[in-house]
Image (cartoon, rainbow, N blue to C red; front, side, top):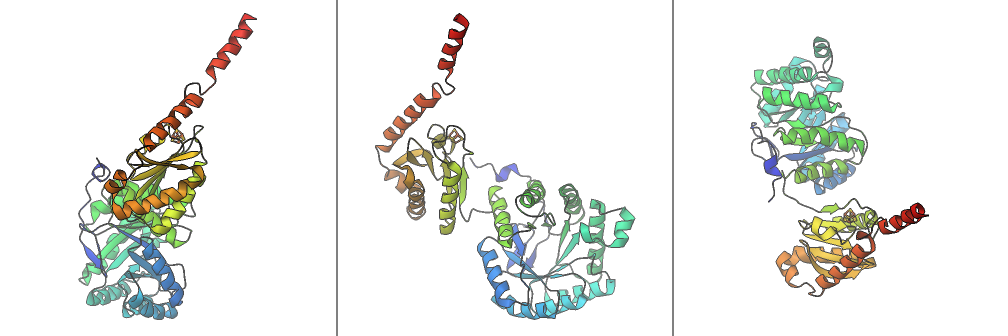
Length: 409
Ligand code: SF4
């Protein structure tokens, strides 16, 4: 039984908005976002990155709109983009207006950097008239100085207060197409801020740990913050902020939602044992080779790579397909049942071939087509390995004999 999704708290209800064709909040699937690192004025380069992000799981992509060239770039990028485009605005109201003119599907405003109430209300009025949503993107590192002083720092309460003030300006001009983020680079601060935001607002929340850094630490920090909140039912859209190719952000976001059971699996889920002294092959090498080959095919399948046949097929019996190493041979199995035994150097190839067949023909057909003698061969390998190592894995009998000789002598 899959208990993944039911192990999480029920999702908190938020108002739904639309960022172009992507709905955010309410009962809409939690969406994945990322941000381009190209100059937005470089239309072809930016579009190439947007396509790569979309192919790797991004539902919405943000581009900076920091100067006139960027705004002109957006006017060409938006109609050719496969996913909705959000313009990131910091200091200049003109850039927000130019991005709206360029036809973007959403804006992100940083209340710490665009501070004049008249300008904020002007942008909100323009967005209202065009039906374009805005994210109030509060960031602990660029909090409004007045709020920073009032709260004695970028506390969770200060971050939420910043969002509340901005939201009040929007509401003054009758604009309510809003989502909110209260990011911090401290995971603890970010978690507390989002919990408070969730209790304060009924608006969709965009989750993220800002400036999380390079891999693997950045991934860990992002996951610690985002996954904790998702497990509590908080969050409607998310972005990993990694100092890496943004494709890694899109992949991480998508994978996190898939492993939590919050989005359907679209691609490969490769599981592998951590390896141990029993392993009959270099598990890391085989797993990496299998991952590279299977990822290229983008098959929606769970595949296991296990280092030995003693525990492998049983421990990975929930996988659609797997391979476990025996004595110079690989045991290919489907849902724990051995279907074929292959030479060790053909393990990855056999795995890829079978993965394609399972996706094309289905598990039942592939199980029916299994080599009926494979189970007996596998059993013989298992027995051999147990004899070799399992029965006297630590050479206990030999040691006992040595001890006896010494003590008797
Ligand atoms: S499957 Fe075998 S090799 Fe891998 S960790 Fe388990 S016992 Fe060790």
